[in-house]
Amino acid sequence: MQAGPRTTTGRVPDQPTQGREIMGDGSSARATTRDRARRALPLLIGALVLALILIINLLPGSEEDDGALSPGNPAPQGARAVAEVLSDQGVDVVRARSFEDAMDALADGPATLFLNDARQYLSADQVAELTDESDRAVLAAPNDRQLTRLADVFAVVGPTPFTLSGDSPAVTARCADADATAAGRLAADGTVYAGSVECFSQEVEGAAEEGGAEDGAAEDGAADTRTAENGSGEADAADDGATGGLYVTSSDGSVAVLGAPDILSNGSITEEGHAALALRSLGSSPTLVWYEPTGADIASIGEGIDPRTLLPPWVDPLLVWLLICALLAMVWRGRRLGPLAAEPLPVVVRAAETAEGRARLYQDSRSIGHAAANLRAATLARMARRLRVDRSASSLDVVAAAARHSSRPRIELEQRLLHHTPTTHRDLVLWAQEILDLEKEITSP
Image (cartoon, rainbow, N blue to C red; front, side, top):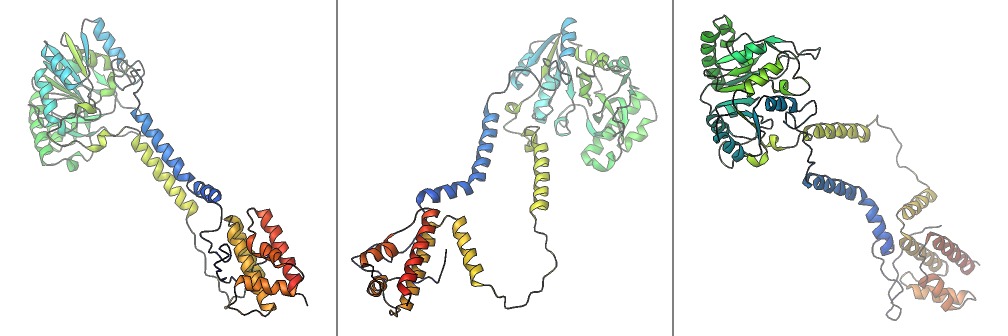
């Protein structure tokens, strides 16, 4: 395939196909659509994956009870064992599906509330309403915001200390609460709280610096009560905000905060005194209202809810995974610049290399029509120069001069040089060789 300089051919009114302007790359509509679809394939795949994720999230979930600390979940992270033992002992375990159901169940008679709001959907006012309506309330690891409306002062001190071994050390009750004293010891990680009666004390490093003015006031009040209840030297440590308990109750015992709710799970209920604390704290009333809030229970008014608590639990690992993938892609595809290479100028590139590179570009983009137009223009330009035709002459004038100089009819030359347009690569190669032979025949002396 040979390529030459492109020339502009004139337009003749009675021959509309001659010298016509080529739009785009000269390819067929089918080839153009196929190329664009191939380039858009990654975007289409991404859109399909996103749509699939949305459809999966919108579909109704499995009816199987697999929630953590759910009274119907028999898995290790569930709490079915505690619920069944309480039922065998005559406690009516009522599972509330909404905030209204929980309030109605508590209003029916003497009842204990177990609130497991792991996603922190409820507001402080809602938690206060539930505790006021119940005879006794056990709150599973609430946050500081949810504790602000309670009658007694509770505060979050911090998480339990981290151990390299991964095993939680057993801690003894060392408090005046009868349920905690009967349990004896706990071996679980969780959140340490400050309150009127602190059991299973833990020391938290750096808790004093993290707490605000409101937390400090709450912990000071709790420390005074601890001194009266425990009668020990732990009050000095509490003044620093560095100690608290995994199980904290109000002064009258009507509200209990369980900082290690995992002790209720099927997998750990048989360890240490977990079963004793669970059965005594949850089975003090004829009815136990087991309430696990959902997103539908979020109050439309009141203090703001952290939007991150509304996201499914797999979002955080997914974001970390995407960040790692992005970093790996940056390292993989990032341009690593080396030292500058000195090169003498001007750079001389052979014409054959330029023509071959241009031809490969046309081949890769399947621009058959565009390549044919360039070959036609270059052939007519060379024939016009050899036949001494004026540079302003049209393509028909060049064909007429070629017919006069050769023995071929003018109609045949017009058909070969002007009207024929290849549609495939094989067609283009054969036509290029044909017009090259025709050019040699006409311009030879």
